[in-house]
Length: 187
Image 1 (cartoon, one colour):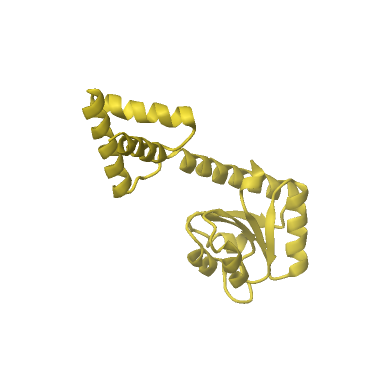
Image 2 (cartoon, rainbow, N blue to C red; image 1 turned 120 degrees about the vertical axis):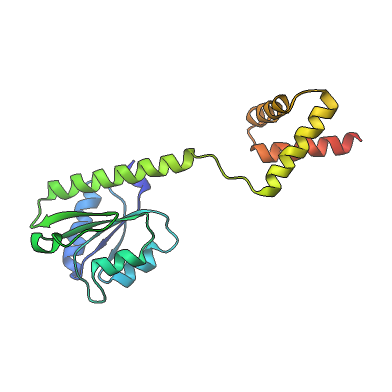
């Protein structure tokens, strides 16, 4: 579960950031970077859809709230700061832990956030893929061919394509292409 989520640690003091990273790594998390500026985090997170930034309140180039604006919406932040700073923290996908903090509390909070991110990843994978207009037209064309040649309903034609797809281990669109090609060779 924990290896699927990218974690970056960001603190202006390199030594503190490394200590946090070491604690997280020892607890089984995959930390892909230790940064001291917000711009470094932005670069590291480029191209990633989701992940977690464990960070402090202020860095040399920006504050956590500015960084939050630059990051994709599915990147979560865990803000570690004194209670006075945390009272101002009201932002989506930002969790807070007061400093000074206990290692146990940090690991538990990271575990909870990573679990939430992993669940969201699983839900995204389960969602049916959106088909392009061309793919939908291909499916309709193949269903028409099957309906005409085999005198079956559209539903039966769709089930036939699905069954062949599952039996051969290829995607629905790929199977539709194969069936269309087989009709082309028959004629």
